[in-house]
Amino acid sequence: MRAAAGSPRAAAGGRLVVCPTPIGNLQDVTLRVLSALREADAVACEDTRRTRVLLDRYGVSAKLVAYHEHNERRRARELVERMRAGETVALVSDAGMPLISDPGFVLVRECVAAGLAVEVLPGPSAAIAALVASALPADRWRFAGFLPRKKGELRELLSEPGGTLVAFESPRRVPATLALAAELDPDREAVVARELTKAHEEVVRGTAAELAERYASEPPRGEVALVFGPSASGGEELAGLEQLVKLVESGAKPRPAAAAVAELTGASANALYRALTTQTP
Image 1 (cartoon, rainbow, N blue to C red):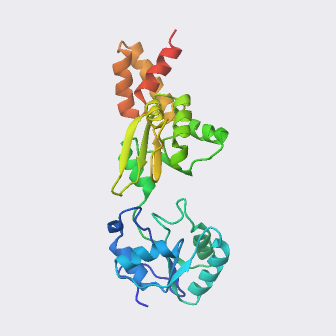
Image 2: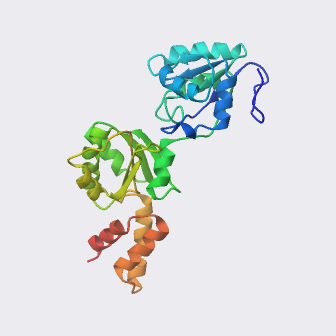
Image 3: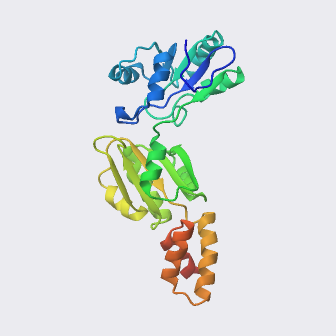
């Protein structure tokens, strides 16, 4: 079977091609992904019915193999044996990049352990789309996958220092999650991104308190990604606070100074001002 132009190929044996698929709009599939799906000896997918919709849209004939969280380990061993025999396997999930809150980790690990080539194609990702659309700092960020259901674990995660936090959440749990975020820091910047790339896409920005109030009585509909700005307890805010204190001690007015420092550090201006006023005698 002929490899796509410019793509790596193992010297011996087959390979695994990780193929991201559209997260809502079928037009977002790339030409390289379609080529890889056409050339693969088998396409490992979560739900054969959903993957078939994409393949039929573009006239791709492929042999589908169910690969999901319930059969991942057993099927991974089977697919590795097929690749050792020289076959090419394409890995897809229902939407987005495999492994990112989707099956695939076991198969990739098994391929690496077996010395098989693993090629990852770029493409759609709900986490990246939500981060960029949020207009929150993207120089330092982390992805938490689906948020924990236990309140104590969720509280700990939301309180962790670090950059911008991106996570997936069940629509029905969004009100409680935002209420907890508002309880921890009402002025923390937050974003609710739903149905990204679909007809009813919506990106709502505000503070944690504002969004908690908005969704208190009516949860959002569809698939949801939440984005939270840097935590007020994070290193960015602490470094910013030190600079803010120096500016105020030099004669700058607190609120304009807080806004200036926030612009430079990506911290929350309100959180900086609040931290300044609580520590000032």
